[in-house]
Image 1 (cartoon, rainbow, N blue to C red):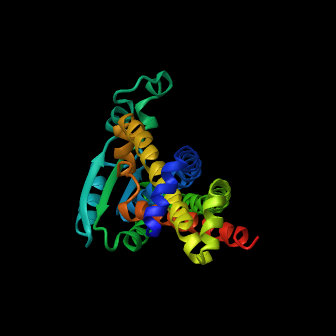
Image 2: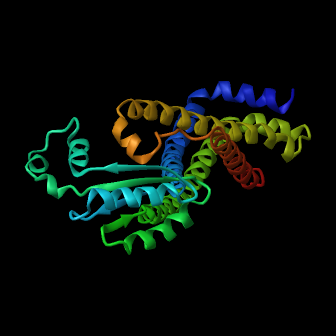
Image 3: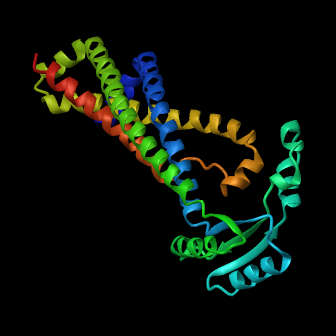
Length: 289
């Protein structure tokens, strides 16, 4: 009988114990998968904003129509500019109040909403071109300020670093949890099969022969726990995605995405490796007793 057959037989005999182990591993991996999901989406937003190639040129109230047209023509003639659109203060107020009821904002005069020129550039040279244009536009007398949204990218980058740090710490927690859970399960399983192991040792079975099915069971527990965690997170993600505000997605420039298949596969593989390693380490000590 091969190690896979022996592992399958042992798993069926102690299915309740293994099921509890898989659930415990899944709880640990849910935390790690949730952190990775946040990191993936924050990185997507950061990448989208870094390559968005857009700027808002806020105009002073004294800007005349002719001056605005002059700036628009100059912007359209700039290499790499794909679109230039003038947004009046009234339009900005209307967009802000669309589908909203805010008495404070509604009470503000139209002058509180500055007119602006929205500029879009090609993605390839967006960052450097925006930096150069920002300094040139700010020097114009009719321009109040220029927002290139570079600070947003810096803040998102900082948030991404924090998310990666949290994910790394959670990975250590998952490592400890999986090792603890799988090791405890394997020890209990070995105690239940003590007679079988002793018989195998008496007939000349090597430690490697005895150890293989247990290592396979540990790998299966880790892999199934990681897969169950991803499935649970997918259900929660679908629920949250259904309530996601479309306007927020439009503002961020992207909609939430789930973990890529490569990352899901890597997590399942990590679970299998941790489970197998924990089983091997615990058996190495127990079989020498």
